[in-house]
Amino acid sequence: MKKLVAYITATYPNKDFTVDLALALKDAGVDYLELGIPFSDPVADGPVIDEANQKALKNGFKIKDLFDVSKKIAPKIPTLWMGYFNPFYHKGLDLFINEAKNAKVKGFIIPDLPYEEALPYKKDIEANNLCLIDFVAPTDSKERINKIVKDAKEFIYMVAYAGITGASKSENLQEIIANVKAVTSTPLFIGFGVNEQNAKEKAKGVDGVIVGSAFIKVLLDNNLNYTQKIEKISIMAKNIKEQINS
Image (cartoon, rainbow, N blue to C red; front, side, top):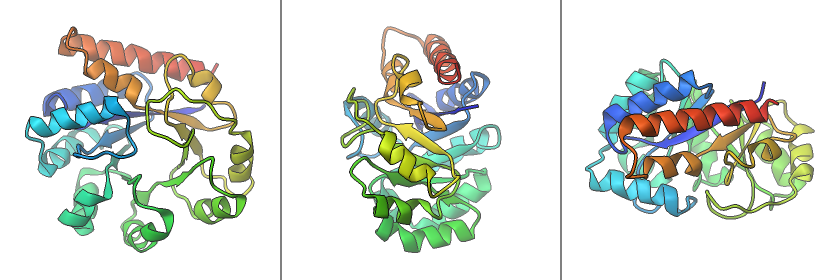
């Protein structure tokens, strides 16, 4: 069965909503929750997720809020913190490691930390039975893929194209998929631009999909109340999970 990873922005529009949405996504068949840490300059994310980041920060988001909601979410659905390296660096990686263990969070996704620079941090993270998700991209050579994925834990995040999240680009990824599968049995999930319309196609040859902007668009829809937002996102998640496994 192919897996579905759902990205949501932590504490947007508020902490209680984040918890309610996360648990509803679990019931809808989501396998992993990618809990986004609001940040002022999310360089790998498109305008949709950027807007949710800015609104969460404007609402007064603090790192402690991430820890608080995670304690209610992570014991019930496998959860990873997705954030840019700046907060990890300034607050201290040890703090995030300790809080992740306390909350039963599985690990971290840090898209602006290149593989080589991540290695010393990865050692500390894995020593604490957590994971740091590795990325591969269409621009990576076969040799670089071999180096990145040989020790990958939990799953590998394959970027669907060179760009930002939420864009509707398409590239032929069969060669990179084959290169990854040749050297590791760690599951390979595809992200960037995955939505209800293209999930089935995007899932070909991989073990799962990562969906973010499609869900966040609903979060940003001021015409819906909280209950309607959770309902609509849950239905979308169910549809995507069915599509990728049909």
